[in-house]
Length: 543
Image (cartoon, rainbow, N blue to C red; front, side):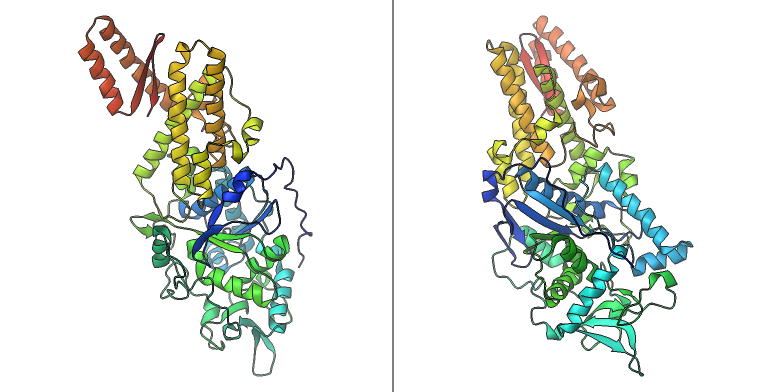
């Protein structure tokens, strides 16, 4: 029973000075129910803990949405110049893991490792940056046991004993002893809420709206008649008869294994010490997981997170995407039909607190966005004779980005507004490209195109979507953006079809058949193709 070594933060290389734009960042806080200015606890540094996967089975799109959402949050902090310590845990022991492993004839740790690797592969394919630390629950038993001891010593937990006075292995948090319980998720309004928070309050579980929670079934240990209060929850629990012998740990309060919530309190404290800046996770974790986590952390004598952020669900026909409800889409199945860039764009296409309806239209819009992005980047790179290096793109400070993009990202990570700013810049860049041949000051004109290209790629990179970054380049998802040699089949086919139409239009204009030429232009325009006429011929781009 050993722990990992004391963490040493290595996330310091290439750190930028904190941008002036950082002063304008505002973020929502679940506890206060309001958007407020962000001030880091430690100047120049941000500590983030995000609840990761319970590795019981393959990842689906609903799981990965939260990972993408908080990856974008992290990337914005990094673009603002903060040194970010990002912790994402792995729950590798749990009732579901034990039960499913037994049903499949597997060792529980074998099953956990198989699916942990599947999650890691899904994160990688979708461009989610690796965390600074990714601790497993099974590697932190001593931390959890020590934390439980502190809670007991502080009078906020009790050990269940048998008739002979011996500890049974069951330890419960004494909710009645903690007057602050419910502060995270009581949904009594203290501020005027926006549309997104109203929806999440209605759909997401909370102390005031727990009911029969189909997304978070009650832990069997929490059904025990030994509890002093129905609200009490398990910190440590005695093993079931069916639990393997290697899924049990000896403690002063009996043999057993951790409850659902204690691991995150132990690991967030170990890797981020006292109060840290942000605790994140999916909306379904708001209650009971995060409510209980906040209570037990503070009852142990430690500060909890300064701010709690929750990403909303991916829905299918209005229902949360969930394996338990039979409407989950596995990541491998989705990636078999769509490029990883397109899937990531779709998952990050709305602000993290907004529900994301998953449909063919969502993916079609993401594919259209990719075509517009790749077309501009390819054409702009050809016009200036090079693609700016990744090092140059990554070094762009938030202060150098277009103001409308910065304003959107500072507005509680409003990615919809940020995407609108990107496409505004692409439209302006396409206009510059169309006029390039007419400019006498060609060097100045090319510099303007290059500046637009750098801005577009840096904004995309902030969202994890620069087509010339990894993993998109290695996986072939960059399409035409990398240059003529890397054109996607879709772009090739579209270019051939449009070029044939443009050639026919040129012949019509030459023959002074302007009605036919206009009809071709209008038909292409209706299909989403913008035509720019110049002295050297006509060029096209996606609107």
